[in-house]
Image (cartoon, rainbow, N blue to C red; front, top):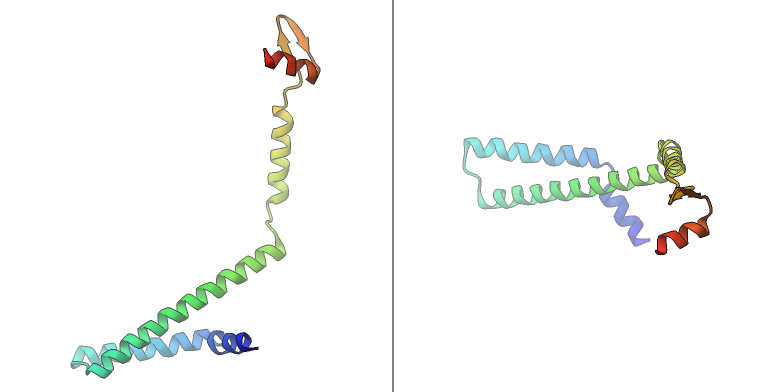
Length: 117
């Protein structure tokens, strides 16, 4: 249950959290352009930047997991096409017979004997 609570606290409404942090950072940046920031304000700015980076990583992880889940559920749209291409290539590349000393050898056992020589 603790994991579910943590997930809800950290991943719900990420866009609003991003916007809030960006606005606070922007406000500190504007204040820093006109006046020198106090040590507490600099620490808070660094904390906000860390929080924004942390949220970005969480959002990236969630997006990656959702894309993997979607890929697993829907599959790859081109799988059937590529499977057909590879099956056709495999059929074309099969060695069905050898020409040895002017004689065609169509059987696999004869191929093995020829290849051992």
